[in-house]
Image (cartoon, rainbow, N blue to C red; front, side, top):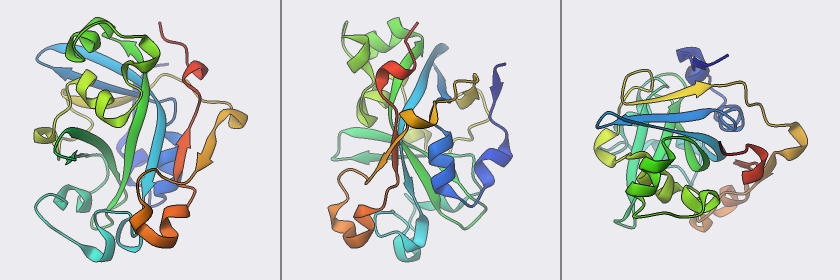
Length: 199
């Protein structure tokens, strides 16, 4: 049965569990009155002040990272390489700056809108296959950082799409070589794109 994720899901202190359990959940946006939905198939956990790969490592606190310190259930969106708007789910209690980067998805609804935002027709499998293309297709931008995930702009639904345990792949995160030993942590979770068929 379709339901929005409740606050308790986001407030847990185990960001790795949150990242794993977001697989199969449905990220939704309603931007300019246009609804889009994507099944989440790849995530990365970032474990706050003790994680060298996290924007909050060492307790770093800036205007940009302030949403990370709020209670879980907000969007943390930042610009990467001056081009890509990357969407993260803030988790944990207040002042515990955990976040989960949503890296890829499978289109679920609003595919025509996604094609338009991506600049024309593309193979469905590659439409939202990376963190930058995902946000482009769903109309997510850095101006939305701090947005609650229980409102009318961005939210996450549970449609009962639980990935089979054997299909979930865990490994190190991408592009965090600067994080030393933390770069090798198995904080990236993904399932093959075909595991959840597009409509």
